[in-house]
Amino acid sequence: MTAAARLAAFDTMPAEDLCSHAETALAALVDVMNQETVLLRAGHMREAGKLTPDKTRLAQDYVTLARAIQRQTGRLNTEAPAALDRLRAGHESLATQMAENLRVLATARTVTEDVLTDVARMVGQRDRAKTYGNAGQVAKDPAASARGIAVNRTL
Image (cartoon, rainbow, N blue to C red; front, top):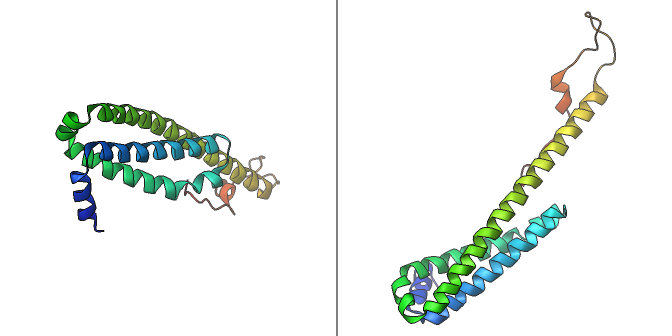
């Protein structure tokens, strides 16, 4: 089924069915984001990363359904007002979960960068010359502090 045919199918779908599909997609997206948040808080970065494909797919599904609902708001207000209200409440819980998820992701990234910076600094200190220079102080080579460290910024 092409994307255009899929969108047309959503536009002609009965109001309750369309809202039900959107609620299911929304609940699944909130659930996977919650799982990711819990894993990140626990420091399980790899396990959290494994959820990314599911989270991406669920987000795309939900956005597609949300756009169909936006196009059909007038009809849905008439045919399924209670279902539309449930979706609005669910969307608010998604916004809350997304904010928390982004906060935890930002914290994890900052912690990771701090750890890598500290490791690079320690490696640089270990390799630093331990003799005195002309001024009677140990020579400092700031470029040596990051020697031998590579950073993968996929998170």
